[in-house]
Image (cartoon, rainbow, N blue to C red; front, side):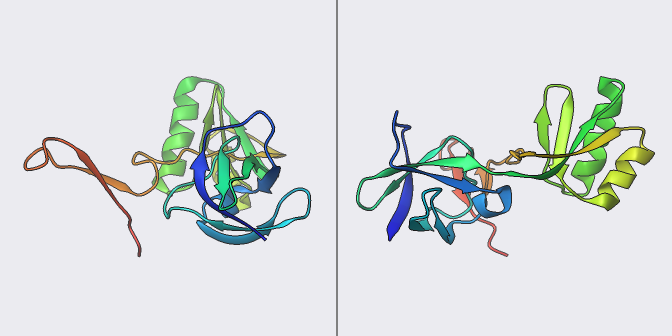
Amino acid sequence: MLTLTRRCESVAEPYGELLLPFELRMRSRLRTRLVSGEEAVLKTERGAILRGGECLQGEDGSVVRVCAAPEEVMHIVCADAFELTRAAYHLGNRHVPVEIGEGYLRIAADHVLGDMLLGLGAQVEARVAPFEPESGAYGGGHAHLDAGAHGGRIHQYENND
């Protein structure tokens, strides 16, 4: 069984591909299968989200490309930038993972949120597409700027609750 342990540089011809929806790309420990059917275990650093196109290296040196699996999403567009920003605000206020694109938002399918967005005047379309939401202001874990004793370096720590 292939054990994938760390991120690595992309290669022209990877050993295989790992097709995962967003929910599973948030996990650092996972038993899964490559597209080829070969069993694989994911044992990567905690708190980091895997993105489509990234590569992982196995303990044996083989490189696997991560692919964002198509999944049920809601594609949101609005009449203007103000209305789209308003929709993004209301989604963010509910701590919903949101993909932000040029002139659109995308969220995981959720009829309650869809109804809320329609009530705000947004156009909501159900689609099946890869989902790549923003990772958040801190890129995974939580960053803390300590300009005192550490010369302004950023320290990473995880919120494990």
